[in-house]
Amino acid sequence: MERFRISGEARLDGSVEVAGAKNSVLKLMAAALLAEGTTTLRQVPGILDVTFMAQLLDTLGCSVKVDGEAGTATIAVPGEIGHQCDYELVRKLRASISVLGPLLGRCGQAEVALPGGDNIGSRGLNMHVAGLESMGAKVHIEHGFVIAEAPQGLHGAEVWLDFPSVGATETIMMAAVLAKGTTVIENAAREPEIQDIAEMLVEMGAQIEGAGSPRIEVTGVDGLLQPVDHTVVPDRIVTGSWAFAAAITKGDVTITNGHAEHLELPLDKLHKAGAEITVLDQGFRVRMPDRPKSVDVVTLPYPGFPTDLQAFCIAMNAVSEGSAMVTENLFEGRFTFAQELTRLGAQVQTDGHHAVIRGVPRLSGAPVVASDIRAGAALVIAGLAAEGETLVSAAHHVHRGYTDFAGNLRRLGADVIVEPDDAELYWN
View 1: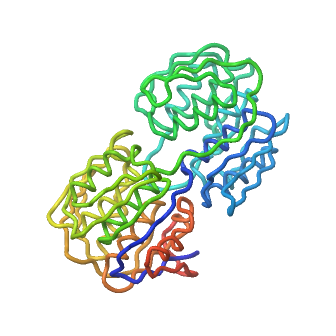
View 2: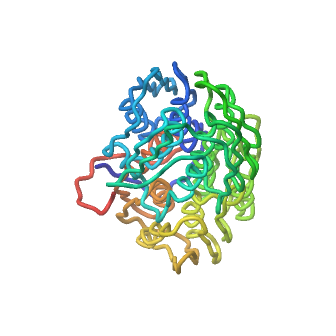
View 3: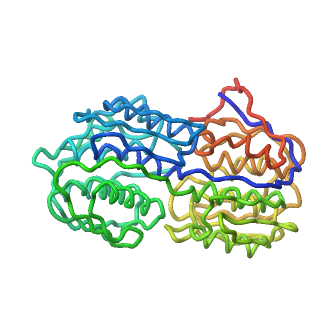
């Protein structure tokens, strides 16, 4: 295991470049299964989850090569592929469920172990299953595996989602591209990553309309799709992470290749907190001249405030003037981060879906543990605003979602290293 060692009282200053979106690239890699031949993805982030997904696709018979320096991934898919996913790989990666739709659509069957990944509360698969069943699949869970069968192939259907689930929208959309007839997804997720996946599928020959709106229409095509060369949309969550990092450390950071239009509400909250935001041709700049002001936040599906930036907002409020409430509407159990933040001297009280934060002038360094990707990154940033030294254990969580996080922080002027950590802690 590894941990971050952070020297506090650092002000971030400089420029950082954002790679492709984790929440898009993993699904794009799965979507490559819908074609025979070699698909190339560009602007691929150098993160652990990409490695895990590459290994998973290898077990299905694909040949995957990831070039970290070039930021590319090539997925060579043979004419015949497997349909069973290994538990040891799936348990490391929540996005492994993304292969369910493509495998079922192409092979007529799929066996995928129940996924692992972050420990941030319940993330059920009910909507995935209901959507596939409405398209003619028979789905059950047995011995820890999701087993889906459609020996006669899938057919079009009208699918209403109880909630605009990103994962369910992706699963149904990818399964529908080879189904007979037209599938309509109502109350679909609208995230930029959904639009990116749909864009690549259309490039591959799929017929999809409405991605980015609450209603997506997919008309199935005959035969497999075609391999393509596709550039992954920039990661809006990493972009937002750097924006909040600038605010928390009273820094001045230019974020290149970041799309401000994908972060309208978070940037509005930063502006209300006192940040100066300048939109540039290839990104934007965030400068926090003084101590931030507290801001209330409510997480909601896109285009609302992203749940994945909630921890950074709490960290900013922890060092801000005044008090604020953060309401988490999407995932239960995501305030574990707040408990660790109190070890740094933050004043945070949680009750169900709400966290009340009273800002303090300065945090103090202490040993803490990351519980998930965003919590880990936010704890590192909070450590930069603390007096003294902070140790953040379970660094592997952060490596799953951020390319060279410590290296980028050092280039912005921080004193951060990654070192071995032999302590027996309660990470996953």
